[in-house]
Image (cartoon, rainbow over all chains, first blue to last red):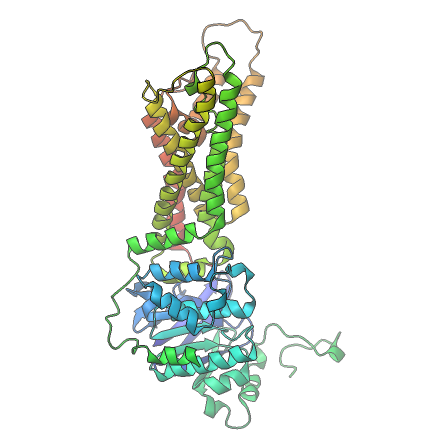
Length: 251
Length: 291
């Protein structure tokens, strides 16, 4: 279970996360939504101890990540498909990671099988497509058979078959009693696999509710667009709008 | 689908197993870093190049001197050691920067959130790999002397005074240079700036300094018997650079105007060049976010 409480992260004058509080419960998939730059990835990096909060706390099963005695066996993490040395094969990457926790060869082979990477396990990760990189990232997250999973955009770059697979995988993981925190931009994807959705914008909590409740009058996408207009930092324009002075909130 | 059934067949994650079992102990992190180091082609290229450069340069140097009347094959033993330092230096830098120049640091430090064991493990793994490489490179240098020694019917006596120290010194020097590269790489984190800094410090700076004194001293000035002060200062500085200190490991050389550090003193100076940037890198890992 992940508990984030009054979490603030500042980089100099920039506030990336601003007093954020939410919980990702065991036995549920918690969707993490927000525009680009909303602070989702920053929050996830703080949760897994790569960054320290400016104030507030982030804990997993009641402990700070850095205090976990066996982090990989408690939390499975996939932050970015480019978290691999491109010169290392998928198998050796997973083996090196497994050895930090005394995890055996059998489990490495098992996660390679679970993620469908058997045929490419001997290839260097630098030759992988984005989708294969995502599968390798998910394999690494599953390695320690953890009770909590933190997945940043896991379906990014996957083919339809892969998207379906991730959807079933996270549902199964939650059904086994694990806590899954999953960020995505794909609204219909979250509507299908998440139990609860945490929406943030400009580092602040905008909504924290069951999917069914948020999508009660319309779709989850409608709810998201209703919640986030003031929080969108990077906004494109329709072709016909080129040259107009549309600002946030134009929707 | 096989993937999901395999996942669901696994035991409940937190119920049956103490969470403390199987954490990242130092020996495990060392094993992981050994796997990481040996799974990169660049490591093996560096090792092979070290051995080849050492053997070929020593062979060429011995061949060239073998026509001299007083030819001593063992006199050429260290002739390849300066350039054969380059591959271990590069190896160390690449181990030190590898995580941060690629994004693999996220995986590494998520697995070992205390962070410093990673740096210790990289040091141990690099030292072990470089030591094996250095032993092979020194063996190659000895073997490379054999043809020219045979051509003059001279037997190689490796037990002769000073030679054992030279052999051990060369091995330690090549290992230490790899660790110096690691320390610079771990501190700088980006490959190109780290490589540039390492090559400048180890190879370019001492040559530039020595050339500068050669140019500034007037060869036609009458010999006064003493060492010119400028030369003494430069020689002292060079003796405290990694290359100068390292050279003291391989032979009892007396550099005019420089303090006589001896092999142990030279080794300590070199160790300080490794320890200081490593300590700074460890401090940075400990106090700053890894991004």
